[in-house]
Amino acid sequence: MKVFLNFKVAILFVLIVLVFLQYLSAGLALLAGLIFALTFGNPIREYTQKWAGVLLKASVIGLGFGLNLQTLWVTTQQGLGLTISTIAFAMIVGLLLGKVLGVETKLSQLISTGTAICGGSAIAAMAPTIRAKQEQTVVAISIVFILNGIALYVYPWLGHMMHLTQQQFGLWAALGIHDTSSVVGAASEYGQEALSIATTTKLARALWIIPLVLLASWHMARKTHEESHAKVKLPVFILFFILASAATTFLPLDSTQLPLTGKSIAGSLVFLAKAGLITSLLFMGAGFTRATIKTLSPKPMMQAVILWLSISTGSILAILHLSS
Image (cartoon, rainbow, N blue to C red):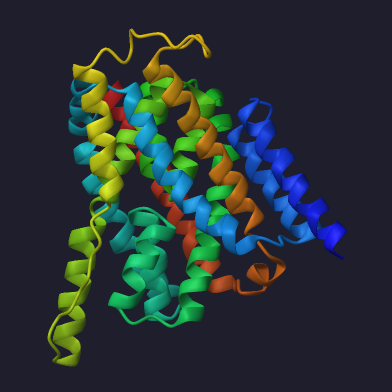
C-alpha cells in the first residue's frame, strides 16, 4: 500500500518536472492533473489544493517583473470601461437567468459573482456574506472550475481562428474567463503581449470583489435588520504585483544577466512565474474528484454556461468594435 502511495506521488513529481522543462503547456498540465486525479486518486490532495492557491499568487507577482509601470497604467486605463461594463452585465443578466431557470437565489448569486469577477475566489468571498450553504458554494466553484478548464483550450483556438491581435486576445481573455489561473494560462498560450495585458486587466477586475461584497453585506443587513459585518480581504498579492513592476521599472533587472540561466533577472523571474502558474493548474486538475461531478445539476449549469457564452460573445464584439 505504501509503495503504491509513493508511486502516485512520484508520478505527480514527474509531472511537475515536465512543467519546468517546458514539456507541458498550461492546457496539458490541467488535463494531466485531471487524468492523474481520476485515474489514481490524489493521495496528497489537501496539499496540492493548498499549494495551487499559493503558487498562483506567487506566479502572478512574478509576472509583474515582466511589465513596467507605464505599460501597467496604460493597460489598466484601456480596459477599465469594458471591465466595469462586463461586471455590471454579468451580475444583472446572471441574476435574471437564475430567476428564469429557477436556480436557488444564493446559488444564482454565487454563479453570477464568480462569472463577473474572478471565479472561485469571488465565490469564496461572497459565500459567507450572503450566508450561502456549503453545498451551494461547492456547486458554484465546481461549475466555474469546469468552465475554466474549457476556456483554457477554447479561447486560444478561437483567438487564432478569428485572427485576434495580442492586445485583443489579452483583453478578451481577462474579461471572458473566470479564474485568474485560466486567464493567465490561456493568454500565455497566445503570446507574451497577450499575457501582459490579460494579467493586468484581470487583476484590475479582481479588485471589484471588494465593493461587490460590501454591497451584498449591506443588502443582507437591510433584509435581516442586522448590523453589517462584511469582512473583505484585500488581495495583497496584487499590491506585490505592482511592486514587482516598479522594481523592473526603476532597477536594472531587465539588463542584468544571470550566468546560469542566460536570461536577465527579470526574465528568469518571469520564467519561474510561468512555470509556477502551469504547476498551479496541474494541482488544480489534480484536486478534481468524481464526487465533484456528482454535485452538478442541470439548472445552475445551464445558467453558468448561458451567462459565460453571453459574456464571451458580448466582450469580443465590443473589443472588435473598439478596435475598428
